[in-house]
Image (cartoon, rainbow, N blue to C red; front, side, top):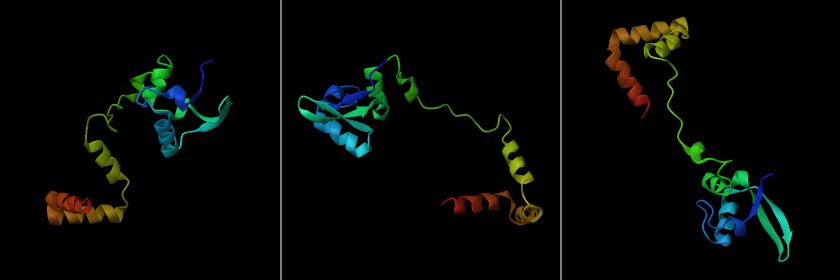
Length: 124
């Protein structure tokens, strides 16, 4: 079974972590890493769980277990496939009759340009 807990000394120069145990301990405090005490020859040291470490560090420690492929951004997947009117039709179908009537009245009076202007002002 792979080791899961590491001291700052063991994490030096692993992935994006620096070469200073003090800097690693500071980063651990700032990011609230999960830690436990390790008792040794020189008193008490903190050791940090691998799940709290940056992905580059996890990959440096166990490349086969934590591949960097997990860092690739997710591909965009549209909520509908093809016709952009499908979401609009679904929204219109969910409107109450009085809301639908108010929308039709607004469109008859101000047109689609008025609707676009209204939406633009609301998003500012």
